[in-house]
Image 1 (cartoon, one colour):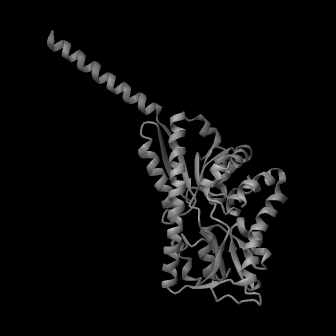
Image 2 (tube, rainbow, N blue to C red):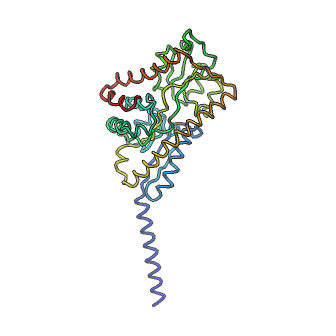
Image 3 (cartoon, helix red, strand yellow):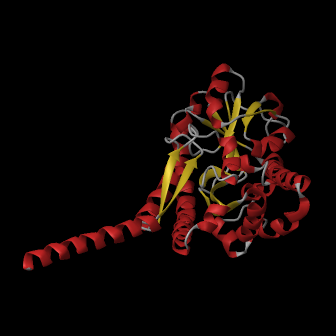
Length: 330
């Protein structure tokens, strides 16, 4: 009897353990994600830091399965894919989203820090817009704190007011800053990062606009030997989710995703500021020359960048611009 009883008890215990394990696995939600740069670029590495922390803290509750980067889906298709639920989460700048949410340009136009926008209601306001226009929920504005620079093959030619004669430049641009560069008098070619190396190599462009961070990861510094300072705009990289998928998650899963996003928002900001300084020094040590705008030319350059962004948003959809400026402008 003892042997039979022990056998039955052991079987029952094993069944209970397996059942509890199955229930835990069934309750653990999995979401898929795609990042926007090749894996070797700093922004992808930053996103993977977020994913790793979520997966560690979210065992049994929520896990992120990363499908890859632009080899999975081109940058320009990420917003639409997320809106339609093909991708649950994307790590992607607001710029390629502007066809869906023109107001996303506020992330680059602002000089405020991401946590300041959380505190003053700016993020909540723009999340209402993302929900309506793109079926998206913005978890965090990450990798902030740095701007975009124009990198040129040849030494820039200075104009009388201390600025640059931009008419001599044909600049590879993202959609985000195309109108700003055109307003300076530069020729502009809008391309995704994956096309830039070939364009520089073949002489299709003689300048490129991007951040210091990640620039060397693409190998573009082989061609562009000069950097124009100061930087304009602010990096506008977001971690966002399909809103329908976000709403379907348990409260515990949403809490983990959001708490880690808030932590990463500040950590990545601080890391990006430091990395911008470090990578800038690396490029200078390797021979890159910095061309500093001065005087009235410098002031006009920065003012034009900000004004062009807000004017473009106003032209595309004026509905929310006044409210956004109250939150995102100083």
